[in-house]
Length: 349
Image (cartoon, rainbow, N blue to C red):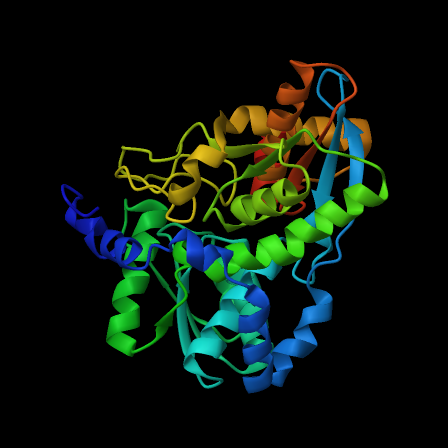
C-alpha cells in the first residue's frame, strides 16, 4: 500500500496496511471485548447507558416517493454518533492494554470531542492530533477536557493528522486507537447501532429497501449495513462520500470544504474497514453545496437540524427511493446536528 505514496503519508499508509482488519475480526463479537473492558475499568460500564438509545423518525424523500427514516444520533451523550465510536475504541484499548493505557488518536472534530470527554471522566491520558488548520474552538474544547493537542503538518489534511499520530504513538509509547482499522468499532455498530435501528424499524412494521450512511472511517456504515442485512438481505447499502474526496481518492489530501467528518484519505488509500466489503456497497458522492442545501431543506420543511453528512445521507437515500416504485422506505444515519461552521456555510451558500 505504501508503494508510490509521498513521504508525508508514509507512516500513515504503513499503519493502515499493517493493522487492516480481516472479515473474521469484524465478524467477532464486540460483547466479549466490552465485558473484558468493564471488568478492568468499571467506569466504562457506567458510561454505557448514555451511549445509544437514539430516536428514529420518518420524513419524506426529496420527491415524496417514499419515506426516509432518520436515525438521529445527536441524542447521544456528546451530541454525535462518535460517542458510540469513542466508547468502542476505549473499550478495545482497555481490554487490550489495561486500565492504565495511555492513548493517542487523530480526529478533525466530533470523535476528538467524544474521546476527550470520556477520557476526562475515566482518568485516561489522551493525546489528540488534529489536522493542520483545525478550528481553535476545537483545540480549546479538547484542552478543556485535559487532552494534550498537536496538529498534522501544513498541507497534509486529515491524513497528515493520522500520520502524526503514528509518530506520536512511537515517540511517547502510547496506544494508537487507529479508528480506520478498528474492527471492534464496526462490530459495535453492528451489535448496538445497527441492531437498534433494526428493532426500531421492525416495531413499526418497516422493511427498509435502502440504507445510506456517509463514511469517515467506515465503521458506522459497515456495522449498520451488516446488521440490517441480517434481517433484510435485500436492503441496498449506500456508502456516501463527499464529491470533493471520494473513496480511494487518488489526489493528495487537502482542506477543500466537504461534508464534515467524511471523505477519502487521499493518495489512493481505501478505508481498510470497507475494502473487504466493497462488493456489499454501492458508492455514491454528494457535493458540499448540495449537502448544505439539504441541511436547509430539512430544517425549513421538517424543523430538523442535521449535520451536512446526515443531510447528504438523506439526499442519497431519497434519490434511491425516488427513482423506484413509490411507497418504499429507507434509512439514513444522521451523525449529529451540525457544527457551527457547517451552519455558517449553509447560511452563506
